[in-house]
Length: 124
Image (cartoon, rainbow, N blue to C red; front, top):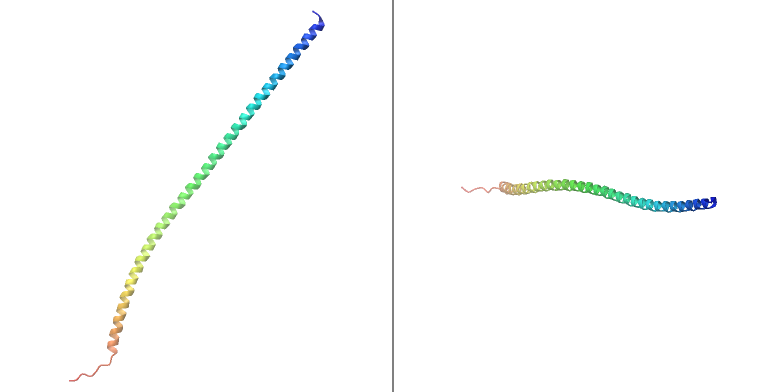
């Protein structure tokens, strides 16, 4: 075997190996790039899902707080209506008492006026 052809075939084999290595590196680079994009998209989806879950918890907390406030306001409204009804009843009783006192005052004034009238001597 000729030493020149040996080195030439060895060099050709090395060139083929280098070319195959470059192709393999390029393919691995592309696959890793695809994997990185997929991981990035998955991370984005997880982040979005976490953000939505946090927002849902916040909204549920706010809704529960609004429900509690609504219940307190409903209880306050009920208590105020009862108080209003009591006051209306007391007002009606006071009006009746005022009317009765007014009638009694009128009667007392009339009686007092009769007592103050001069009496005529009676003829006997």
